[in-house]
Length: 634
Image (tube, rainbow, N blue to C red):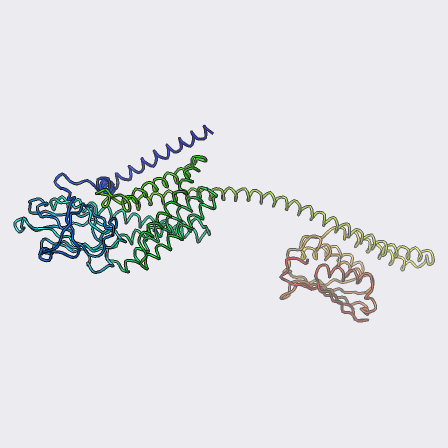
């Protein structure tokens, strides 16, 4: 166990070195990112020639110099967060800062880290800058730092004030942060840096999350993966949240806009925790159910907020989601300690970092009463991005592992299939040999029966003829010739004559033509190519037996002087026609004969249509026909 832990530690260090080395190399190629990171780290620091205004006066309503006569002003410490007051401030309020607080130069300016939601700046009664419509609740400028330039010092009255009119409510980041004052040049550079930081971080979040969402949703559709679906939805929602958060003039009512932002955060938090539990193989039903339950309560509280419920309900809903997510992330950290692996450690570190920074941001936004808490940089969107990337890396590692496992499985399957194919071929060969042996055995039995019934009866008849009529030499010679022909035909049936129909017929003609000449029978042969090509050896043997049977019957019984053979492919069929000019016969009278019975049996086995036409005194015609597109008779 100790050796395994050391291996994991060494692997983690190697990974850390590789990541840091590549990150530094990347940052050298992208200098603007260094500017973003540095501006984040020094976001709360002021330049040497700037100063912070930490105190101001406040009065209700929209006040300027002329309208504030008789108005009672109260001292307030900046930052002034409205929702932390009891009761919470609502509506329109005005802050004023003495003009003597500003530097005595020609390009003085003020940088406000966060104000509003909508804010107007006046120098006494002179309007200086407007950010949003004070009476339009569907605009929000509290998410960005704003800069205001003031007229030259000569035009100022030393008893003048800068009036900052603010419109907001307790549901938002309303109030006024500390105000940084200094020269226009210094503050413009700082403001541009902050704006660039926000812009590039938002673009990075939207682009990366959108790409990850598209890839994950495509993978979910292609591979029907529920984990890829959850990751795709979570990434897409975070990209949507970043886009919504960057808006000033809202395209929809504020309550719906903020509901969508909360919805994106709540669903993302629950889904990403569920996904983290799954990819780290933590089989805990209650933890996953806790994520769904907290998400449901959060959605209900957010919907209630739209209809005017206290904002504390939304805060409780968010807290519940954070608590449920914290339990999930702690379980992942515990799993990474018990069963350390690069994926477990990566998700655990990213999750714990997100949890710590999320709690830090939550503390600054909702709880802390520190003077600069209201203007501190909001880290959660960026840290969440790293957590998404960590989950994406783990899913990618799992996917690569699955691809490799699938490739290995396919290789093993191919090997097994090859073995089974070889075994099947071996079994097929054995079955083929066995079938041939059975066919040979059956054919031997038939030949023995034919020899017994044919040759045996002919020899017995011949013996009887010799014993009763020894002087009838012509009759005896004829009977002996019949016995010899029958014996030769029986011997010929013991082996096939060729490997296709044309060859079988050609060799049959070669064997029988000389025999027919001795019997003074003329053979007329007209054979053209067949369509059928793939008949088995046993089928060819059976087909040749049929031909021999037909010729044997003609020689033995027909007393013919001519035999006509016509064969080949004709249209959709192959056929063989054998016709003689013998004495003919009545098919009904010989239908039960052994020879015809054998012919019909073989034709049925070979799926050949057999027809026999004959009349007494007019010879006989035997037709064999089968489908031309058949790959074999059987």
